[in-house]
Image (cartoon, rainbow, N blue to C red; front, side):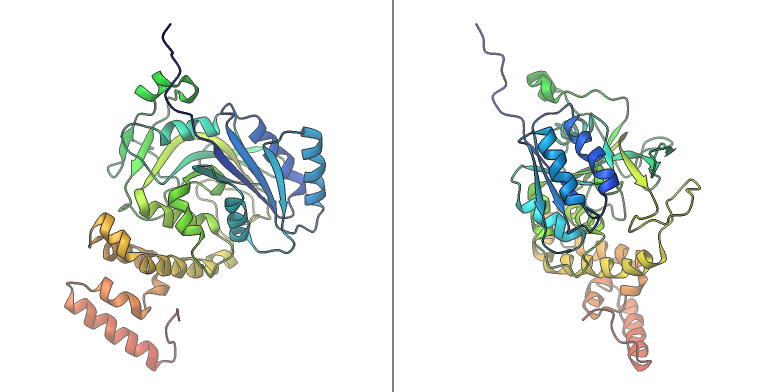
Amino acid sequence: MNDKSPPFELPCVAVVITCYNYRAYVEQAIRSVLAQTYRNWDCVIVDDASTDGSADHIRELLAAIDDPRLRLLARPQNGGQIAGFRDGFAATDAPFVVFLDSDDAWLPDFLLAHLSAHLNATHSAALSSSDVFLVDGRGTLLSGTFIPLRKPRSGPDGNGLAIVPGGQLADMASGIAYASEHPVTYFAPAITGWLWSPCSAIMYRRGALEPVLSFPFKANMGADYLTATCAHLASGSLILSEGLSLYRLHGSNMSSIGAAFTGGHVPQTPSYRAYRSILAADVVDYVLENSAWLSDVHGRKFIPAFLRQHVRQFREIADDPRLMRYLTRGRPWQWLRMHIAQWLRRLGGRGSTRS
């Protein structure tokens, strides 16, 4: 009798649920992990010193559920979102990692669809992101898509490559086979800007995420912006057009306002818009610190091209003196203009935005 079992084991996925004062929602997040059709996962719930009794509530839930794949890590003091990411990441060792905000939830095929995409036979990527359904605090459906997600909306995207998950691997291991009528698109590291849905819709390769989470960013919130943007630089992203999770707009989100959703893009709070300059400068720090290996992998033109696009998006970081040689390489007149502009800003007492 021929052995039909595959010559490998399917990977475990590390699930990190981050919670801060979301006692009202965290049970739905946990139960959405338990309901996954892909069963090979390990989950750590990181409570960031909540003051609403979340940690005790989670302990009671885990005792009632009694699943050894679930465990609680309660931080003694609040450290912000990125501290929760780091602690959860360090407490796991699986080759794929997902961060689930405790006010969000997954549909049952989330893990299966993402792994099937990651294990395609065309392009290996640093991370994947799927579409989301927007719901309010009571769970009422508000929208069937997240507009900033870079998915095909009126035909193929000219900068992306269509991916077909499955194939030979699906034939060898039926447990990873996932059929979907929704396209999967690969975007190379050279494609810049926000491509993804929010945090809870993203799966990372551990190897791409490790250098990002070990970097000493100054920001303590907006972790999904830093992790997605910086991990993408390693080997690109896979975008799943299928909605596979619920993103909750309840008025207490750090990045989005509590006003009624009007459709289209989700408006951001004024404080978050101001905070974006810190995130943008953190990305610059990461890119410059890792410029040697990024240039080795992608070529010497990669860093200047990325930084030019980044500065176009965040003009407030343009006076960082470290950027001049990258932004003006081969462009002497631009170098002169930037040099004069920086001199005028210093003369006016503005100085640099980054030490």
